[in-house]
Image (cartoon, rainbow, N blue to C red; front, side):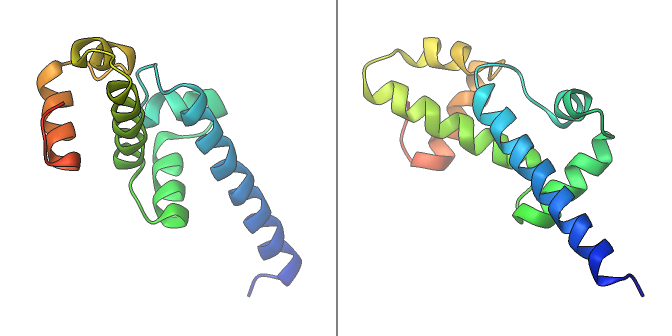
Length: 110
């Protein structure tokens, strides 16, 4: 059995990683983001980042990133930025991906 202090230290370390990952995602929404790039930024393994994030946040990392990007895109669209510009701004890569995700999330076209 793991001593209480070791478990506490592990929880603190995990929370720090999660906080850092979330801050990194928020600061880089306009960049292509994936588990590999996040893992590289924090000098961690891709699988560790994915598993830790899913375990602590109860949502997959990729899904979380896409949700953050689509809500940011929605905010930009609401102030008149064109759908194509928003798609490019948030690095969706392909307009059809952006369109499908937006339609699925908001049940309307961008």
